[in-house]
Length: 389
Image 1 (spheres, rainbow, N blue to C red):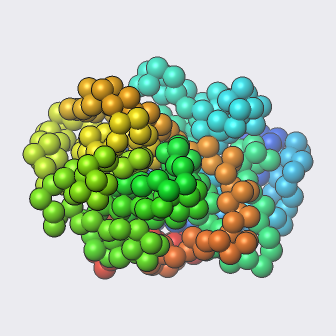
Image 2 (cartoon, rainbow, N blue to C red):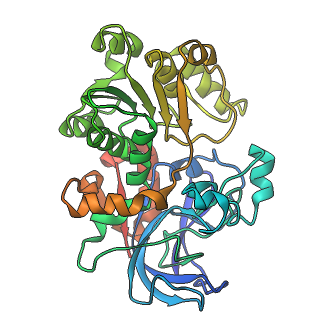
């Protein structure tokens, strides 16, 4: 079968690889109909996430039709069209019982790697390094889904793939980020990063009752999309200082909640952002956390900083004294995707949102390597790439 494979930093190739097969009785094999390239895939492409191996199949935003199931599968059947969450949960451990699916104790066969790096590693992820289990991803013609009864959402026949595909990751991620932000009716929320996750964050903040959402980015196309959702857009390249601008917009109080939807590859023009780039280029830093620094500094006293942006290592110059002194709440983590998929499907079916508004490019799998390069270089206004099989 055809698959997009990681071959090294800035090197993705389409290759012919072996088709997956049932390995465990709770498995299913899915013929992929639609997949997507996620912004967090660029962290792999840029070499920021360790333990990638040559030939690893990429992709964690995936849906398709079940073509084979193991003997213990009860909830789904051959012929069902499903969306697959990016995190892999067993459905039986204590964390799964608490709906903390991304913290599952049982699905990562390489848990020792995660334990070494993080002391207590999380669940396995599709197509996202061997720290997270080394599972083949969904940018391929077929994918094996372990514990498919837990790791699937059956979607209605006849609904377009593009309307529900992002239930696999970015819509639940944006929504959980907004939930974590502890939004109350009338709140002002500042969101760093207007990529696809940031756009879902903005939509979700309004769904949860925010009165104002302030969107921060440097790309006008992204900011214009945020403005279409009702946000106030600020291009950080056009203002003297983002903290001064946020204070001005909030009467000197600061936003009630701040959301870092950027993660470990933050861009910026501050001194600390420049230092981050130099240190990362020299191998002296793992992450570039300037958006997180600003979110902590900007947030009002007693507010909440929510962090859906992916971080992978050790962070430098974090203003933790500000977080402590202002009694901030920090909430973060991989999304418990399975918890939110059905409620968010209901919102889609009720026409509250159509997540496909973020899609800019539709390609077949043969164009995948080219689109990774363009996405990385921000060529041709690449924002969200969908791969049709």
